[in-house]
Image (cartoon, rainbow, N blue to C red; front, side):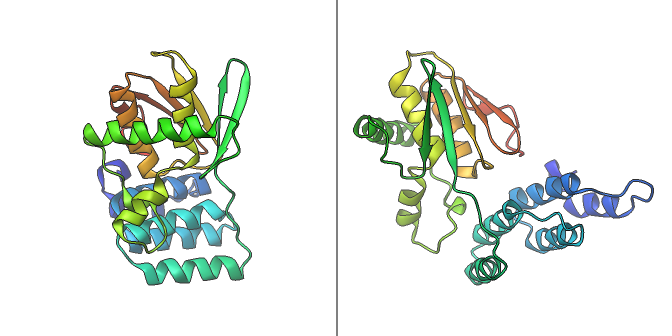
Length: 227
């Protein structure tokens, strides 16, 4: 139901469960659907249920922040950030890794620690140019700071999985599958970026994020944009 936007019906079904009580995994599935469909009210309700279960994680609040930013409610973004800080709820730093010729290469957002950083950033800029020509537009709802559109686009340009993909394009022969592991849920913009890259560069891209495997091929993802 959540996949097709029937969020209220999905919530009613969950609440009607008698013998089998809804667990955190079920609530997080609904919270992910709230993020996709920008449902603020239900998203807040779902996080409340996770709190009742004492199962809330930093990632749940990040999803709630994504929902708020997608509708432009920067006051609630600010309030939620303040709440997280007061409660000591800390988010992990996003890290993406790729194995090339038996060597693990790790990237953080805006990473400049790699020995081939100049080549990677040159490749990244070229990829961005080619994807924009093909119609890719950065999904700025993934940026959780109240910036103008140009600043948000720049802030999203060098997420860890994008740098890992750029290194994959740079360091492997054409046609090679790019396999990436990320410790957090991939954001909407990086997901769209990977779809576009798989089509423009004719590469299969596999990203294992915190939530699931994503197989990108010919501009589509195996998750059908629901994760």
